[in-house]
Image (cartoon, rainbow over all chains, first blue to last red; front, side, top):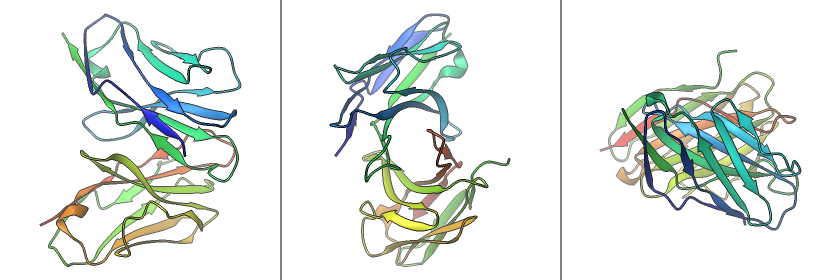
Length: 117
Length: 113
């Protein structure tokens, strides 16, 4: 079974600074997808960024970028120029690209990000 | 599109009562997921459907929990009888076969007293 681990229960950053959230995962599959979701106090789960395992290039979405290290099974999220609106719980998630558990999305425990003005 | 719609947003019920949570997935999506979020256990997948058929219900905690998807546009998660430890936020999510990411509803906060 796949597992996702976020080792940082809480992180904090000053507004306009950069912060990196860590995520590691365990899988025996070679083709899969990785995601970062944001959950603000409104509790809506919002997709921040996704990465396909077959792509070597790291995904980027505006101020959000990932460092995908397939061999190390590491998938960190970097937030540049942090804004107050970035304050939320961030979840790392994994999904197989095929196989019997094709549809299943497995989440890490989450990291609470606080942004200080 | 209105996104995934869950109802109710909040539910408070007494222990022993039946609770039904509802979900309308995004039109055209083939997969539907039910998740439960608690402080202790984080986000847990309870069950998911593909084309209205339950594929994996191994996350359903007990026989008190049941889920149905009678058609492509509606699903229910029922707890009978409810217990205080069922208090959590329940999320529904849906995804199209060819897409990689799932889209979530706003969740139902269930409180069992």
